[in-house]
Image (cartoon, rainbow, N blue to C red; front, top):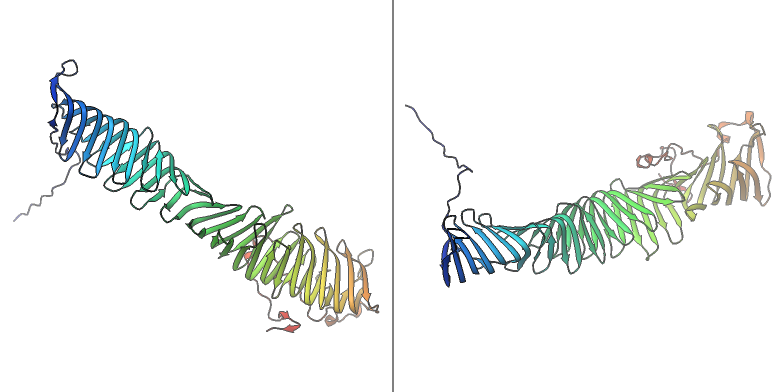
Length: 511
């Protein structure tokens, strides 16, 4: 026994079934053979019907053989009780069900009105489109473009070329835009700019809810608010409250203070001026032809007023600039007083100098270091060679800078020092060790120029051959060069102190 299966397949080549266009009413009917032997000339209260559509005009030519018509003056096309199209001229083809309307064209669909001088309306897909400029207006927005199309059934509009969306609160300029007249959501599909009193948005992909003033901006979009530029792979932005949340490659640039926050996640509040960045977070501060690169687990920036900013960094702080490098657990920088506060196990490096202690305050002058202040416990080390280090230790230390190098160091309270004086030929004389209430040293070209003890006291000089290993350093001496950031990319490295180099706080070791 044989079984035969037959599959029926629809073919796109089969034309849709056509229906006739009927003349419903006219005041007069005649024939004009000069126009067309088949042309019926209709004048006065002319009405046609094609399926459920009605067409009205003052006068018309009706071509029964081709199932088409031309309508003139006060043209009106009605489809049900939801779609009304007006114009000065209409050509309608009943076989293709396409209406060609020209001059003073207006399409009304509920609260949506389309204006143009050239509109083609295709009844089967229920789409009207213009191609020589037009405008669509609804209850909230006005949209114009060179090309546009609108579907009364889906309430979707498409705009291309010189697109402009005008809203009471902003104006959107675009190359390609889709718009839903029900939800009032504009979908951005080409280079676009949104301008408002609060700022400007640049995007080429995303959507904007014009009712709730919320948006999702993709493809490295930008939100510009005053002197701040927020950029990211995707930005969830609420214009009503001025809040932007960024996912992927966040960048918040302060063009006035020349500060940039970066991270893989973050957010910014335009109203309060508060910014947050985490996940590979980095701060860049541009000044004097140099840049400070700073990394921490979490970065925050707050606006004190219209001019000043406060930046905070938490956990695993590492920063690099050509004239200074540093690490600490947390840090704060205030642009008002230009002081950088380093907390919890801070270490600061400048050329051959290393400074560490309980808390370090770096005072900036026009973005260059003026002086560093180490409070409570303080230790300064200068590298001489791999075996010998000049050292200063005390309760309080101030290191003053000249240019980008240390010029003077003042140590107060239980001041101790170890120095290795050099002969003119660079030979090491011995180890000079002192103790006093106060010590001041002056440095020139990274060499000890002068030392002052207050009150005056005598130091001891031990020849190099007589030195024992435990005499070479003061108590609490460490050389943390392995922790020091080497370049702007090294700030992301996680480097922990060695177990025997326990941090010291408030003159007590913390284990």
